[in-house]
Amino acid sequence: MGATGPAGPPGSGVVGDATTGDAMPATAALIPVSCLSPCHGFNGVVAQYQTSQHYVTYVTNLGSETAAEWTTPGAPCGNCHAIDALGNRVSGNVLTADDGGVVNLGSGETEYLDPVTLAVSSVNYTGTATVAQVYCTTCHAVTDANDPHKTGIPWTPGSFPLQVPADSGTVFVEKSPTTGPVTGTNAGFFGPGDTCMWCHRSRVDITHYIAPTGNQITSVRWGPHEGPQADLFTGVGGYQFTGKVYGQSTHEQKLSCVDCHMVNVAENANVPDHSFNPQIAACRGCHAGATTFDVSGFETDIQNELTQVETFLNGENALTRATAAPYSGLAPSNLGDGNWSQDQPVPGATLEGGLLTQDQAGALYDYLLVARGGAYGVHNPKYIGEILFDSATALGLAPVYARP
Image 1 (cartoon, helix red, strand yellow):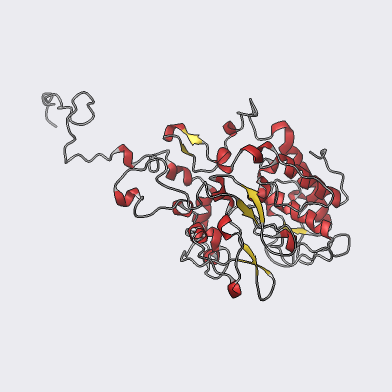
Image 2 (cartoon, rainbow, N blue to C red):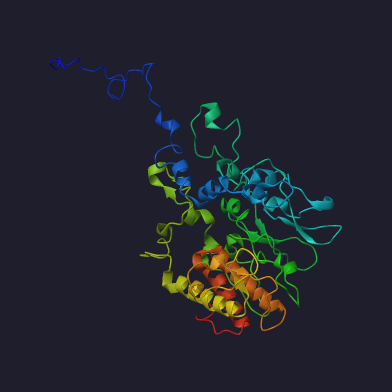
């Protein structure tokens, strides 16, 4: 290597010198920051999304032998699990049998009364997805006219509207008021949270699902679908015991899903966090100094009550985590291990030697609803505390906390 040459002349300041005002040369290979923000930056929306359960589930399904089952046309799963799920439902592009109609399809409801069989049925998927994937275009109505990748125009607030308009009105859950028409229940208005609730729901009309007498567990899938947060947060979707009064927490009255799960990220132009992980900082406006979600020990109470009910049901051989028959009960180490959402009812199980009464079936349903809804009651502390308390009582137990 030869000797170091003399220093070159001072730079012209064309790139990166805010004092010159010189135009960027056409040969520059820099990417304008506006094209990266807020989606493609290192801490942007895409990176956040890739830490979410939605993304993890998608990646898992890519290598699964049963991946296509979640998006099979003519089956109900794709109405939530497919990338085009919400777009199809908003436009009314769903399949019903024998020309049956969903009364409140435009408000998220999925159940209807088959006009020929008179059975409560679910709408079926009619899209084209081949693998379960909840992605940007599932929740956002992206078109050629507003897609920056096609228009070259950087994103601006409001340019990616939601598939379910935030001002569209109320959201309905599947629980009908009576055993007559299948109409669902008006659960209220939750703005952008309506988008979340269109999928995070039980998909079970318990008014028709639980009979006055002689209820039988027909399969391990008996009960609410996984992720029924809408039924709990709105405080209307659980089985409610006759003669009891049910209330709502401040969470349901003043908040929506996005207030806790999509806190604005100051470092990313205040665009909501798309990891969807709840933030304790969102709680401190009301719960000053909170360091965990276990405010006033409520989560602990709910976990202890879930364990008490779980232990009783397992003693009746009514719970399993087995994936196929014969369905063994839970091991002692499973009881209270925190994985209540993995508990499944045993087909053909009885309680105290007989078919389930209406309240026994309702108690089992509510146990599964709270267990699968996660967050140990935080979504609606008062309502969840009440239905779980009443469920334990209906099973002959002495609940571990006072009824809220």
